[in-house]
Image: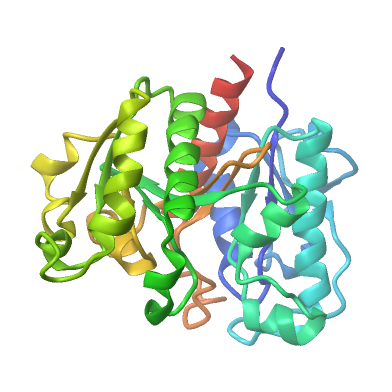
Length: 321
């Protein structure tokens, strides 16, 4: 049986989302079937589109759209809180389509959390937390992936000063177990090899530069190794991401946001993909924001969105098998 199409939520219509969606569709042709959830008046001028009522009605001749009502037009580079409800509704409908089986995965275009909060009282730090809520409170983690690296931050959208208190043994163990399971289920890696960074410089250097490695990280790694997991660490983060080191593991687990995102954006700034692990459905997204500074200028690069579509399709094929 053929896989259902992917669905793509439009993201902030004042950002580059509509532009890169059309560019991705034109670049990929029939190789990756997806339908776009949004308001067609927000598409780049001159885009030929077809309105659908279900994803599997797409013909492939014109840009496929499942219409979502938005309150206002979109001005490139100028987020409008009036459109917040439409952005949120596109995500909700995308999740509903995947949960019903009408779509095989969800790819989300970038959103602006401040505009969503101002216009619709959006109460979540980002997509990841909102999708977990829509999935009934699923326990999730965020993975960033490209051809040369998969990396998972244990803590995400919190101030750096809050990381030590947030980094508990339970939080770390949950993250490692979700990552381990997802590598096997969605990426076909068995058995997965995980490399775990320390929190402090030089992984604490035997406690002289911090105690978190001794008190929090090492005990968790010891427990999971005893279960048979292949885990190295805690490692000094400054030596984990050169090519030779990356060849020794299937995913790196970092302790905080920038420790994870700096290396992957250095290795492949244009082609990284954000993947939510632990959801009962597939979700990927480009690893960049709304890019208001270039929105509407035909400058946006669809490489990351194309990679997100390809990864979602690959994950869907693996789950189906």
